[in-house]
Length: 238
Image (tube, rainbow, N blue to C red; front, side, top):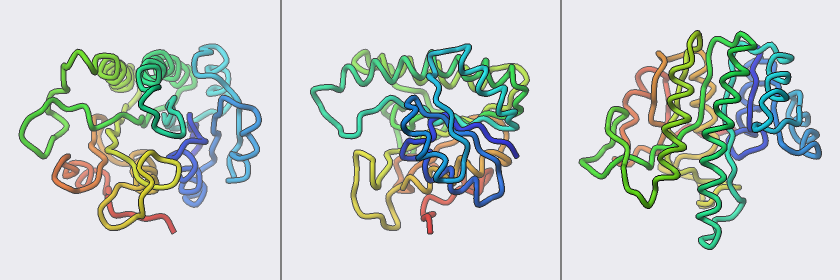
């Protein structure tokens, strides 16, 4: 299939390109920076520099790729977690989830894509009995309002764009090189490779809707993703 991967140079985007190419898919991957196109092409994908806030430019790029599936892995996160910059980071990332997702969904629809798989987050459920399941309410804490508004806007756009089967993957906290939790991989932590594998599976499996993609430690239920997508939180890249 032809796949348009928005956010191809991120910690999930890079292993996802490798998985997609190994599975025989043609991939067009995006970056905001022209200097990073070579990194995408070194992995076997076609690279394109485009800003998700440029609605017309993004639409042209998606239409040119003629995708069967669009995968949304766009984030606006610094390489290192810096508490002094968290407020600005939340604002920037929420804006990308709201405006960037809206532009990407409009572009996917214009290009005739039949399915969109999008990255969301699992650590925004309202406090309650664990494990948290996909039907549980999201938190309403005013202190986290910016993040919650961004998540809700992203998920609403992906799940409710007419003519497109939307799949939302609520990722847990990622571990591994390039993440904020760079600790040795083992049987427990959710690695970027496992998160990428879930996106690959969601291209062809599962009914439209929301799936928790997280480490299986009792915090989030991954039962639905196991059953419908074949997700394995212990998956490791070769």
